[in-house]
Length: 435
Ligand code: IFM
Image 1 (cartoon, rainbow, N blue to C red):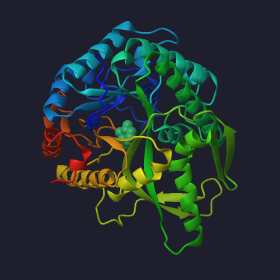
Image 2 (tube, rainbow, N blue to C red):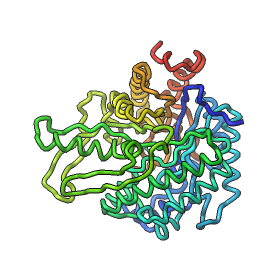
Image 3 (cartoon, rainbow, N blue to C red):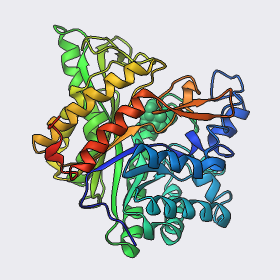
């Protein structure tokens, strides 16, 4: 039976396939082999991750022990479609068993279809800036929908489209390794078209499935409070990074102009092609103008909030979580916090981070923002892209030197107790603030 999870607040944790599974051959491992991904030095941890593909049954017991009633995870396109149009039934079977097990444990699955990675054939034959990418994604989604989505009530089509596009099309840090903002906008346009196609394909067979996008949000602030250009820069960057995509769904138009740098304006049919917005929120950034036509500004972490910084230097800014809910009010859509977490070797930082962000979440719910779930990033320490395994985001510790053994951190215990209390009191979000 399809557990829609619609009647209960969802307390979960999140992961993505490539960051935890291991035994994957995709565009990232291909790049790594070519010495292009991280500092040109081969990192053996790429592709091994946390060995979840082999240990998933044990890991799901850990989820159960954590007490979550939902789990957000992604499936690996490269594993499922290793050659264009050829699908691997064994891999589908395993994902299918994983979904069944979650349902047996009464854990609502939230499935992400695209989380940064691609099959090795993708960028060569149908990169996102070409329209063929839309067909390729539709074919993949149609197969996933037929085999897996009858039991999945919540689907995220694309995780953080802009984060991935900036890495792949502006900074050349991810494949396809380009630096071209016009191509970036074209690729974004195609990704949004692909989202719409996926939406229609899934709804045709599973009309009650709720489908969204997990968008990364950053609170921007001007670096110099009395600087005229910084003041004008901030809203331009805010609109590009935070609002351009949600607005495209309301206006049926993907439009953005940054004077002298970028201008894009094209109609796109997106209205009513999304059921919820996923909020991925981590930090605040300061923006500063500089005289450089190629990149006329820089982004800085300045620890002004007084809440400290993560191991990656990210400025902790709990108030931002509520701000983002406010920004999305105009969409009228349900919201899920699909990612929120901190890279911290010192787990007491995570304890503090969780307390403050959950308090802010409670405030947002009490203020009437339609938040229906919270997923802490991440379930366990994992492979953090350009940072490798050094950035530890997990509620469970992964001991890479001891066969990836897992152990619950104090922050994990805190989260477990917090959600246990809420779930036992009827899961009503208005009871958030009663402790
Ligand atoms: O680990 C990533 C995840 O893959 C996407 N969102 C941000 C996380 C932390 O950087």
